[in-house]
Length: 299
Image (tube, rainbow, N blue to C red; front, side, top):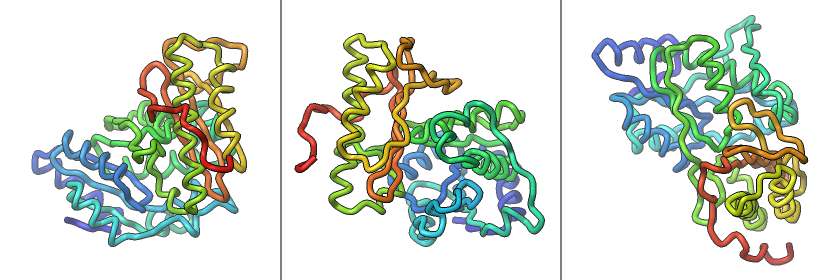
């Protein structure tokens, strides 16, 4: 296992992989690794000869008042998780290395970054696009593997790679879930036991809409209402429940009918924890079966 903190050392390590005839896989993360991240590493390992993982809590994608300072950090556990999953290189820089003195350049994404989380977290995807561009430039030609839990982030990154002509193959992997369907997330650690029980309603709400879609419903408003009705029982705040076109992320109006595929995306707060999830209707299986099970006690 190689552990680097210097961007130039990391660039050199990636170049060495290719110079030796290898194919590089890259998994960018913000650390606090869980089984979902390890699934991405294993997929990168399947597609390449050497896997590099970046571990960096990126300050520019957090707005004032968000959870940058308390975001989970556990470098030793992260390095061990990387090694267990098959990574050979870990890049764990500090903020000063990635944003040198006088830093002023940003990557500004386009319309795919505007709806959904973009409407509720101004500047977030500018920070994401900037740090991912830096990581991909440092890594060079590679296969970059991302999770589909943040579907909008994946879409923004695909567009970035295409528009900037980067020599990178972007792979999106299905969301890894707990047995009750809750999407794995580093932020799940913030939830109290009671909040965790409430969060289990999110995949049930997505499943309700998936079953409605499978029965032939194509009206965007009806599909959104099916999902929103359930999460409204447990959320302290709903940022959005929307159905969007899967490539452009244009949000469908409530009177519109969707086509063969569409993204149903949810963002909400339980307590002080913001959670996101999504389902590609017409493509993804329901995240959980038996979605008609009763809500947690008292809901």
